[in-house]
Image (cartoon, rainbow, N blue to C red; front, side, top):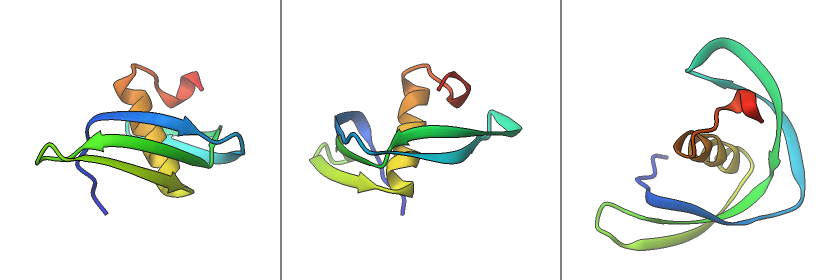
Length: 79
């Protein structure tokens, strides 16, 4: 499912972390084991400027955090 997210923020990270292998299109041949919180709560605006708050878990949480890191100037090799 595609989410359109403007001004995304992670408003809560749960303490339980899960280690998984991650890759990135910026480093096509590189895969690293990265620990990230399994659950997060995010807030963002959609294309109609409506604010959403949502809990993400598992792969959705990981993908959101990975892409959020890009916006913050962090790539997965820095984790």
